[in-house]
Image (cartoon, rainbow, N blue to C red; front, top):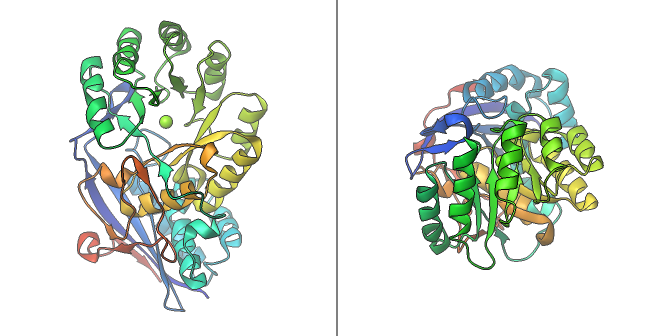
Length: 367
Ligand code: MG
């Protein structure tokens, strides 16, 4: 089987809550997402999606994803989409770095592999654990009172794991953590994600200011070394995210005992192939994981579900149902949150069928 055409579609994804805000005053009102279609000479078609969290979260931006696919596409025509590692090595040889550019193509090829082998991607990624898996709800950055007021409603939707967006001034962040912690019930889990927003002295004050709160601290500072410094002066369970974007970084952080949980975002690692490699290594190392992506709609949510559902339950800290945050549905068959949990499709491939009336015409076609 050979790749005969690669197309990309641009889709705007507005948010039910109007905007999503996190550290450093960063916010997004409408996410700019790219859905990729890979066609083959066997008539099988696969889909993937990449949606950066704006241009200022990771070194990734929506227009860059599309330009990168335009650059990469011609190198992939004629390649076998079901040979995932040769395909990934081909992509790495043709375009250095830019993992996020490769992610949607890789996901689309897993979709093809699933369809031709008549298996859900979840099975091909290692096999399904249990009936469903656990989700978290991100609480967009607002005043402490406003963030605390969100907890009850999210719990009514079934969420029991809450990720606060902090990473602003120290006193307000300490107040945010205390205010939300006061709303928690037995069994709830609280994460304070600073998204690189604190300097070391800020982070040191926050972790001391919430010493008696049962809260995970996620990516307090910009660099790995700064985060490691904070890790070594707090006994809060610790999550690394932005600093860990490949296997060397993952292995180094494990060797340093720099984290208890790692956030594996599919596009940060370059697709399902490399995210699976990182996931499998974390299973062997006993490092728990949040499995998700930077953002996305139905196709991204499907890809997340297949990777999360094929992760041992006790090692899956949380995952995300991005398609419930956005107002636009881009595909039929995507998994839907039920009581704070989600399940991967049992249909072959990703189990999604893009809504062509939503996708419109492709913004680029190669082949
Ligand atoms: Mg994070």
